[in-house]
Length: 369
Image (cartoon, rainbow, N blue to C red; front, side):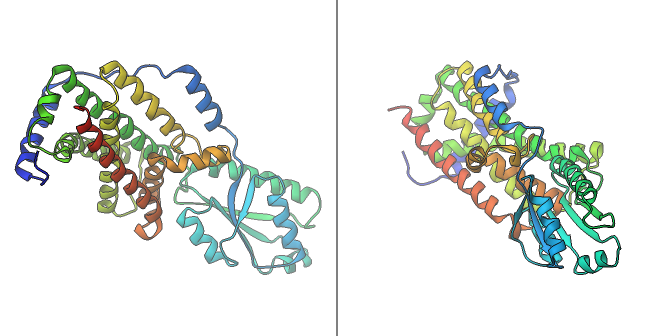
């Protein structure tokens, strides 16, 4: 076996993989997920209520009256204050970066306006990308304002201005489409790549392939190439349909999004190939792929907000590549942010891809031992 990567050998392998995939039209059916695990994951991850909404507070008044208002917002634990700066501009930047869910801005003339018997304007800005949290958060905020006014402080009714940034109409599809896209790519990548590799075991061609001069990396990348091409086309078509049907905007840099999506697709396919090294039948592929994909989906923030999960599960979700990709996709598509904001998620996603490729290549060759 040659230790030097050969482009000629790799292209031959790629051609073989393309011919096999295009010639096989078998449909993979998803089996039922073990009920006990599904109930456990859903019971922890899904919650129609929200808690611990991260809010940055810019108290420009710095008066007893403004501190009383802050206490009213944070007393019941729905809104948890996070440091982001003392002025409105810092709060807006924090909302844009996605480090907080909402921002509360109390104007400098808050106490003076109350003293004159006026109605002060307080602005509460929500990150409208997560329309679910924004909707419920706005409802909680309105209820807090009503209770605050009812107890007579300030004397004049408090007037609050709520703004939904990046998703003014709170279109739910704008929040779910990026999550669905990442989830579909993950589960399809797992199933397709794992199934193709196991099929070679069934047909007896795996041993012949591994006995060729091609290195493990050449074989692995050749298997990734055709699936990668098909998923890129499918993703672009999905984005186009989402734009047509839901009016989903695309405010960010498209080449940056495609580059990061490419890394994510490679990671998903590599994980599927890794799964195939532990199983020997198609039935096992489906079961283990679903067993792997569904927890990743439930702990990704695709369908339920991360904020509604228990703290322990929020920490565990940081090990989930799907969570990082969905966060990146929403930030680029809806907010139009650049690499300077999303680089932590990009770095984590890249690390997952490198580790997945390396472990898959190592395990793939070891199947003959």
